[in-house]
Image (tube, rainbow, N blue to C red; front, side):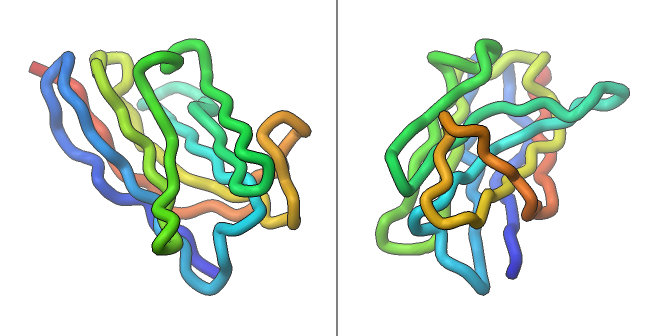
Length: 124
């Protein structure tokens, strides 16, 4: 069972990045997948959630309207599309899953499985 986040990098304010979360050893079907981030000196912050069970999507207020989660139906990867990036979006981004069958973003997901993070730096 493994999760791997990738796609981070350095981008200018206003730019875009797409992060990927690839799963191996289990399927992303019928579960909830979350994105989190942690900036230096700050606590980990929840960013977004998508459920491949009921289709629910939720976003933190700080990213709503700028970030969007999607899934590659042909594979076992979930994406976080980040647009209009701001310096305050700088952080290490992680993906995590609630592997309980039927887990939903609106029913208190339990993100028990985590992957390694990917660094996103927004700077001019």
